[in-house]
Image (cartoon, rainbow, N blue to C red):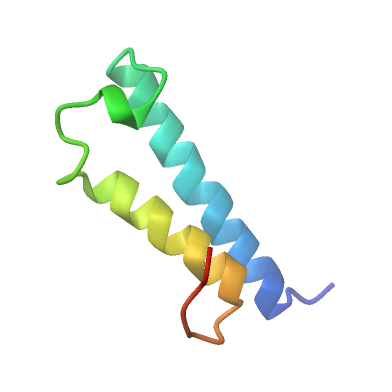
Length: 65
């Protein structure tokens, strides 16, 4: 079975979420918002990037909330 482009984005998102949760567990936190490194954290930034990429499926552009 061939992996679709959409599947690749979902897999990348899953991996970044796994890393984020591992970091939270290592820091004994339930949320990134409780972490002193919130705005400088590369793990969190990577996760946010993967969320947007997953939503856009590589099409780029912005999102309106």
